[in-house]
Structures are given as structure tokens and as C-alpha cells.
Length: 342
Image (cartoon, rainbow, N blue to C red; front, side, top):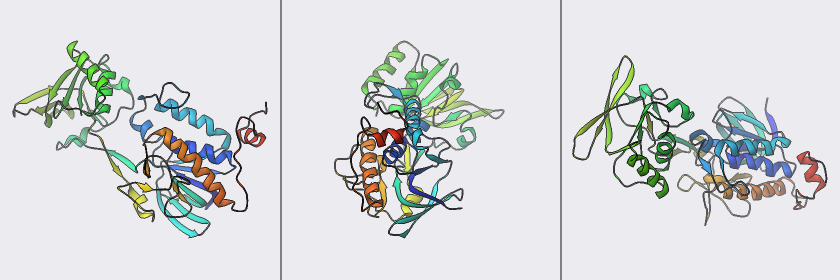
């Protein structure tokens, strides 16, 4: 049975969630689709405990806290989530309607589409050691979902970016031992994070090596030793319980590339008034949207969501003037939010 709705939002990250709020204030109903099994997008999936400091009026929160607050904020608009579903088809029916279908066969007839899917789906860059895939999510991890799982273990952390340093510094006080390996002593991380790792190194809590993992040994189905080759071709055998791999992420647009929207280096060009794509009625916000001066900040995505909502309202109601109303004083806003007028 085809679902009729005002807007389908592709992506349940922070920007996609806030899009529900801005649409709801204008009286528009939204369904939100995401390939992940839970709302929150890639920041919640990959960095759930990483602190965020640049959300207005929230001095600090982590990704999960931000997502929980956004879900609470949009609850009055009763959004419908379609999680663990990927949008596989998007077609223009006519000037006012689109057909959307997901990987689970859910079908929509919608009057507008907002693509808020980050830069497509991100896949971690793999550790290219033959046979290592047999140990993924058992002893080799590309993301940390439960930090306590690694407490009291002999850990190897691979990588030289922010994620590698964040988790070295987070886990150093709790691991039995922790060794960090990177291909050089040139890093892509915040200097303060590097300094903190060096302090742990000075205290004997962290050992740093330059090199690359080239092989491993396993016993009775368990990974027990990883072999690190250094620039001088010498080999160090590291006895470990878990290896955490942070080589970065590879964006994959997937079906988005087939929807007829213009692409520019895996991003979608938009204007800065409506955040509309080259296809009228399809909008893009968040990291996947690009325009002159674009800054990839959650804050910027919230701004884009607000203007996109007004543009969608105007498009769906061309004979109705869209007034800017303030949530502080507007009775209509209070009614839609379900709050008592003061």
C-alpha cells in the first residue's frame, strides 16, 4: 500500500531529524528513511561518545545525547521512521508528486523529497591483511560501540587521525596495554589530542610505533598476534586481544547517484535560498549539499533545514503566503508543538 505524505526525508542524522521539526512547525507531515537500524546517522553510528561543543546553548553533549534531544524535540510532530531501509528508487511522477521506494518494498507518493544523507553511506577503510575479515567485529573493529568491551584488554589502535587518537586517549586508562601504530609520525589529528597521547606514552600507558600491519597469527580460531613491519623492514610481533582500525571513511553515494540530481564530487549542488537541487521539489541539506561558502557543520545543516522547510511550504501551497511565526508567541506554533500558551 503506497503511503501518501507531504515530504520524505532521506537520512535520519541530526540534520534530517531537525528537518522534521522545521516542517512540522509549518504544518507539514514527514516520513524519514535511513539505512541504519537507529536514528542518529553516521555520527551516532561511528562516534556515539565523541563530544560535540558547537551546538547553540548546549556547551557539550555527545552524539547520542544530541540525537535523543532532537528526537524529543520532534516528537510532537509524530514523525514516522523507516529504519534499516535504504531508498532504492526515486522517480518524478509529475510536477507535484514523486514516487519513492525502499529496499524493504515500502512505497511512498510524496510531494517533496529532502536528501539529508550525509555524503551517502560511509564505509570504513579496511585493514588490508589477507584473512583478517574473519575476525571483524569479534577481535578487529572499525568502530567502537561499547567502550567497556575493550577495557582490561591488550589493544592495538591503527591510524593517525582524530578517531584513532580519541580512542587511544579514551581507552588508555582502562586497557591492560595499548599500542598505537601509524605509518609515520605525521598525524591528521588535533594537536591537543596528540599531546595527550604523548603524555600517556611518557607515563608508560601507551606505546607508539611507526609501521604497518602486514600479517597475523591465530590459534584455535582466535587472533592472537599481529605483525608490524617498520620502515627499516624489521618486524614486531604484537600479542593482542583486540585491534581497533581507524583508517578513515570512504563515502559511497549508492542509489543517490541514479536519482537524476546533479552531482559535484559526490555532493549535490543547491542554491542558498531554498536548498533545492536541479530537480524541482528535491532538496538537499547537511554534508551532502554543496554551495559557495559551504561549511560542513551540524549548525549549518540546521540553517539549511529551516530554509528548505519554508521553500517546501511555498512550493506545496503556491497560493498561500508563508508567514514567519515565532515559537515564542505564535498560538499556531504552540498548538503544533503541543504546549500551553503563556
